[in-house]
Amino acid sequence: MLNRCIEPLSKIHVVEWMQGTILPALFGSPNLPDDYAVYRELDFLNRQEDALQTHLYTQLKRLDPTVGEGFFYDITSTYMEGSHCMIAKLGYSRDHRPDLEQIVIALLITPQVHHFTGKCLKEILKTLPPYLVWLTILNNDSV
Image 1: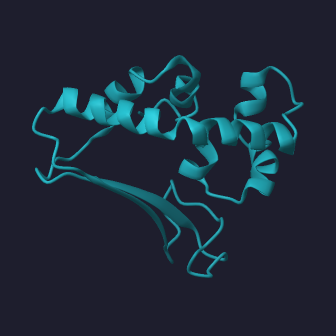
Image 2 (image 1 turned 135 degrees about the horizontal axis):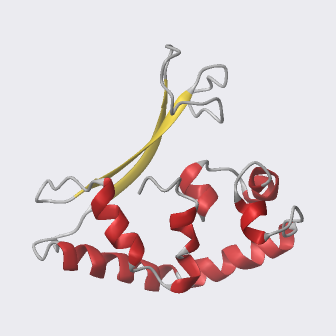
C-alpha cells in the first residue's frame, strides 16, 4: 500500500523497491519478505478496503462536519526540466520521460473547497488502526 502511495510500481517490483526504503531498518533485518508474502499482505489490505475507506471518511467528517457530499482524491506525477527542486527525483514516468526528475502530486477536493494541510493529515493518520500506524513513521515525519 505504501508503495502505491509513494512510488507506484507493479507488485512484482515491490520487494526490490523496499530495499531502498526505511523498511529494512523497521523490520530490524536486511532480509525483507519474499514476493509471495507481499502478495498475501496486499490481498489482506484489499479485503480491508471498505473498512479503511469508512474509517478515513469518518475521520474527515470528525474534522469537518460539513464534509459529506463526497470528495475526490487523485494522484498524478509531473516532470520538470529544471534542476533545483529538492523533492523531485528520477523514476517511472507516465509521460515517457525517465530522464527528467519528477514529483508526485496528491489532491483531495471537497465540495466545500477545503485545503487539507499536513497538520490535518497528521490528525487523520493518528486515528488509523494499529496495523497502519507504521505508515506515519515512513512518511519522513513531515505529516
